[in-house]
Image (cartoon, rainbow, N blue to C red):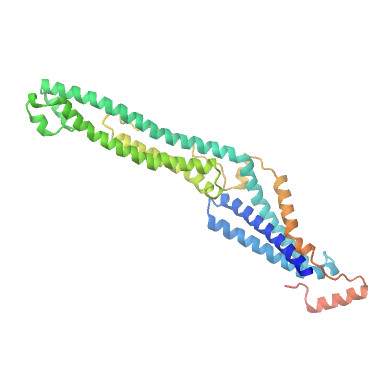
Length: 328
């Protein structure tokens, strides 16, 4: 029965150590800007240290109880325990501050940037359709004018971008120039290029913007910190790509001006974030205290001998002094 009791309290303690590991991991994940390996390594080190300090406290409980907690050097292990508790408390404050205070602001910021990127593709489609319509009317007008009056000015315009009319047509007799057929042939080349660009932007910009939106709106904690940092770069690269495709339009190919705020919330700094959003210190403290109480259950329930006789105390003290002060 005693063995089962100690097994049970060890399981309870281990469960809360695991919960503490997860809390520290997610708190570290924001501080390290999404580095899972580093966050997991630090969290594991802290939890392993918790475990070993707990075992040392159990082994030295009898000595501390009989010598007095203030007199026993083994009580220093409590200080180590408190230090790790303070570290976990900082991680917990930061995690709760993000989850409770910063979440809506992060989602709103991400939603605005995703919407901006999506609007870029919409503007490209609108600009492309208007450009092709304008180009068609302009090309027909110039080619018809060239057919009626073959001037060098019109010939140079039609032979160079964006019209690029072949020399064979420019040199052919006016009667043999088919304005509609020539216009459709040149226009078709631009239409094919637009269709390809539309598919490219839909794949690299629009759909990727949807994936970013999903991460932030569904609050994917594992990918949130990394993607929050990468979101500004995604907006810039998307704007650059869209403007490159706009330059390929025959007319009206001026780039779209995009302005974004590059000042992200300092998710990697608990102190800097606390200056923007005042954290809740009480809730993390209560959580940490409850978790540490359950983690220490094996120590609290560990049974040791208590010497009430001064003579027994002196004998125990002599043995302790002879054999050392701390049991490792």
